[in-house]
Length: 217
Image 1 (tube, rainbow, N blue to C red):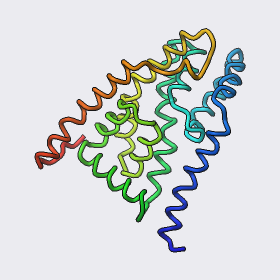
Image 2 (image 1 turned 135 degrees about the vertical axis):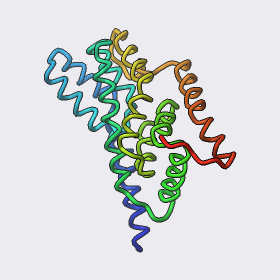
Image 3 (image 1 turned 180 degrees about the vertical axis):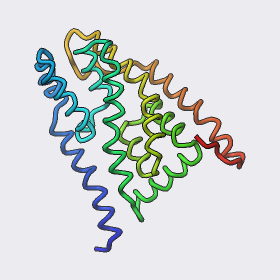
């Protein structure tokens, strides 16, 4: 087995591990356990930190954890949920940034991601991707593979996650009982996110089609 093949296998193994862990860990069971800690503020805060740090390992959407924050803290938990939303995207970004595929599908994905962010600018590209209903960890990994600047990544993520986090926290604060089903955002927000992402991408895509240089962030 040559080195390129081994590198490709090493890239697939973490994805398979995430899929197995996600299948084994039930969100409903975890939410029930966390709900039971709500009356113990210190224990709940520690558990919430662990959930944010490990969220990508179980492939949970950020909205699910944001709804949990809203259920326990109400709208006052918005700052906590937003900070947590940014922090929880950093592990997959950092891991992908360290990985340097040289051949195969991951190398192709890395090159296409780099082309996209070069066209849009790092912060604008991340912002547009966060506003669009694209899976969180897909965006994080693509930004990491493209070597997106950390400051631009954090800025784009923080701003782009605002509408999703606000909607999820408010949904959680209005629940009578915590549930994974109740954490879903409505279609109007999804449509608005797509429209906002398209508006952000329109200028860079036009300049690319016209052959003019992309604007810097």
